[in-house]
Length: 185
Image (cartoon, rainbow, N blue to C red; front, side, top):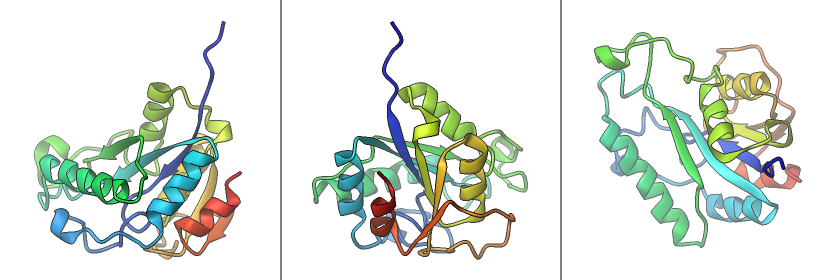
């Protein structure tokens, strides 16, 4: 008997869950976007896992550490928990090809727009990508979602797709994460 597949909403972190800054290097840089917890609760209520997939090239650039990234994720969870919400899992890519920290200064398959983080999460959580969504604020998020076969939602928070990295069109555009949940059925 084949195991049951689950659905997921993959969220970028910076610019979607928390405000985009010049790299969230520590918990001191973290400022949650309003209504994020409510949106995450709504996604769970609709039967979706909520999984963060985030590029954290600041690690490769020596601007932050793996420990700092984990502390930021713990702080996000703590903020969401205050409102009865939670992220099911965090996946992050510490790599950047132009990094200065040798062990992370590599081209990898996990840095969006590549699909490594989504593929790993799909395997770990038995997720049906064809029934899932990705919400992001950058064109690399949207391209990763398209390449992974998930429906894509661009939010107008953070970069709002104005990063100019890739020529890609999302399936839907929403003002913020809370508005994106209305599109997710």
